[in-house]
Length: 384
Image 1 (cartoon, rainbow, N blue to C red):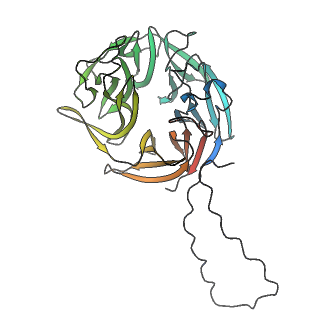
Image 2: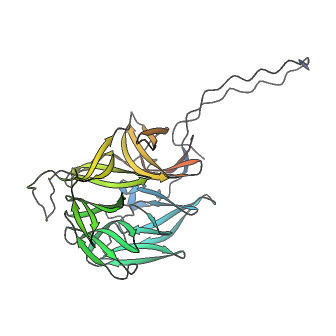
Image 3: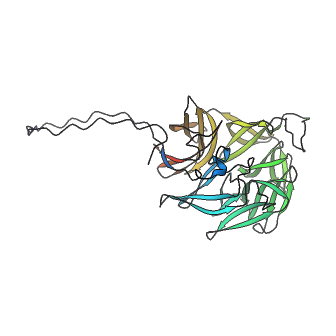
């Protein structure tokens, strides 16, 4: 397979066979000289979106998520702003080394996958005009079922707790809420929360938490979602509203979070709807009597994804250079520090990542423009 990162360092050629037989020397053969570790090399698995003309030149060529489910890696792609849907569910078969289209959703993009209770879920990020309502999609017996949530324009995340299915949503026109279903998506009850769009759902020390644009954090308590004190939310107490959305107000959002043992790590971004949210930082969340507190941890580059492998949290970061991107993979330890596990050069940033056995798989994307490698699924050997 052709590499899309650093070329391997060539090894010296083997010595030629001597012309004459050599005298036998009974002394021990000295050990060969040590060779320094070769730099890791990105292997290009393939580009499942290269032929999609709707994605050319858009952020939708990014692989927003790489998620393992059984012997398949499911990849997310698409652009809700450029309206590139309908969007294919694309899977890479690990045991057969091939891509396949598993289904086509009436969504402008697929931003993430979730495994809950042994089933695979897709939040409907942005319905096409053909769908109209919000939806969650679930894989059951190799067939996809649509769980429709009426009067919803965006579904950002899903969670399962006590046999209840939760979905973070934006109700029409711009109302943050969490939809709750006790009958596996046949009917839904809506809990309105602070903000204009609910975002990440995650567990934190026994509590189910939801973040939102413009509304900070809320937690599941006494059968509903209630605000909880945190460092996140609107920094402008009197924002300028456009269609009920605070376009110029800067706020801090929890984009996604993962938990390993007693540690919960989150991607936290600052920005505004009119200007975008860039440069997520890596922060550890915990609960205290005063509410939720956050501690920022430094890693090189900008964090683009968090994932869990064998009960260890991992972070993917990117640091732009002169025509290249340094992609790094970190792992946390029980002491709450981060260890550099891998570093490789790429011509496009890694938007997402996961680990399968002895390899890290990365989904490349677009930041400040796409390159020929954007949309590539690549892998690099894990050293630890």
